[in-house]
Length: 298
Ligand code: ADP
Image (tube, rainbow, N blue to C red):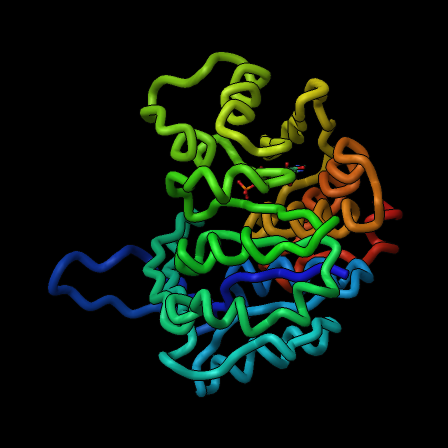
């Protein structure tokens, strides 16, 4: 079984002709509300593929929390670990201009109140999980407690997003650490210009930080996987990209699930690349996630 420990947000989206300047008001399109947040996205993506998936998260006692729970339950996610209260449900306030560029304000809300104690109280979910997948839209001290709570024989998958430098005790159990280029830079502490050279060099630099394995996602160029035995490229699937929102979350969820079935990292990443590709062929995040049949048909 897969356990995702992460965030759940309501994405509030309004189209605008242009962004307001300070002190200015502009009119926008009708509001669209999507279930989102990287934790909820991953849980829905895995469940849609057929994985037995639970989510440990926190939402507010409000309508957005209800929307998120209903979306996850209709995808088949076990929401017994979705805790309620402490703050309003996390929201992302998103304006989209005519060229498709986003401006986003995130209010973490209840996501910021998911505590190490909440992790310790979820022992049953951890005991049943072959793979635990987590991310950084929850407090870092909570992520550290997740790293300490992995059952014997189980593995931790971490996508450090939004990126931040990671403590050694967390890095040491990542198997794999999954990063895109921007996340790799922040985790490595390199500036925005420089970098280690080619992608193999990036992978070696990341492995030197301590994770057991590394996956670098490269958008339309696929991915690279690496561990102590070496590295290999994962081809992407050629698709017509419509909306890349949530592709990384779908990739991570699919990879985590396949690792839990006993697949090798390179094979799991190849499958995940197909899921990521399918996710970019449709608008939205959770609504764009494919079933296993749709992946097979790609
Ligand atoms: P993130 O959203 O975290 O930056 P990526 O954009 O690298 O992640 O996407 C994750 C994975 O989804 C990629 O490694 C790739 O396999 C797949 N993917 C993303 N964009 C495309 C695309 N345009 N065409 C095909 N596959 C894609």
